[in-house]
Image 1: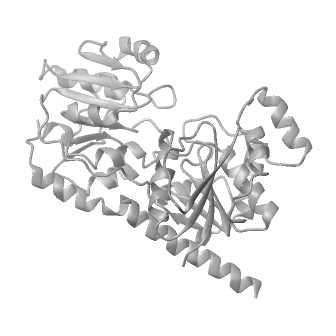
Image 2: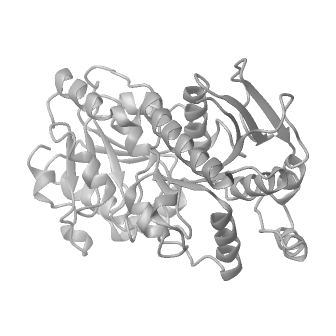
Image 3: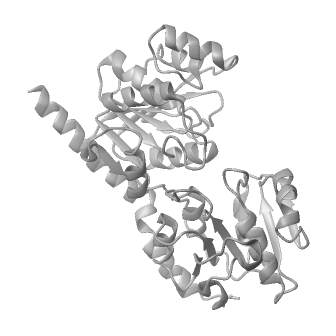
Length: 347
Length: 44
């Protein structure tokens, strides 16, 4: 079947979820016509005869409390891109109204706008949850926020999640029939074969760390490893230096640790790595299949994941035991962390 | 350190086919057909 789909994605082709949406869109264009409802924050360079962008401005976004109050007064779900959502609702594709609307979070505002468009044109609504709400390890979402979300979930004919664990987690907070939920994997980038790494000393961690994504196991474990491999280096890319400095005193310091700024050119970092690191040991519950782990597994570098037994990452790594190492028997005290048997054997 | 073996990585890439754009788009199409058909049946 062929359809005209309205994809609602504030950060289309930008940031992890927008990039994943961009990859999905490129694949769907083989069969469907797509209208992308997006913002000035998106990347819209990609062109295709069956693709149309509908771009609305997203500023101002503050004061957020005022926009929340406005949404409440109008009886609408609140949005972290309130004005954008109102503007985009007035845009219409040149080929007519889409057959359905598919809102892709994150950000959450994409869901709100998709729900409004679907209501306005009486079309089916589909919603994608790149992350569940409230995200694990983060403060409880407000009651009103979750009630708004429930209304949109009730309106939707289908919900997509990135794995079964996230579906189960989300059903603890929102009511929906299991047959309304579908697992739609992250889309990985094209596979890359770099050849052997230039050094065998450099461990790379790409991405954020912080209070809701703690890195103390990683840092303490690295220093334990370095007792036997003194030339090993740990390189963080795009991680908060301030946060890492704050935990360093209790995790063995920052000797042989390098902290590099965020870069969009992650391929060069993956090529430089002897080992790529994944960490969700202190995320409770560990339900994520991150876009990062999918990207890691599509290049020719070993992956070391510190993750609870049975987590989605743990399960994914079992597909490739010859090139991955899972550490899930870490201890709670920093001095004895990173001591899983799986870690010692091949490294 | 793990020795580099290109064949191991090729095998790993094969196991990750369900994360290819084409595979995910196919899953999406199946879902879309199911929900739109269900909706048109309900409309009838």
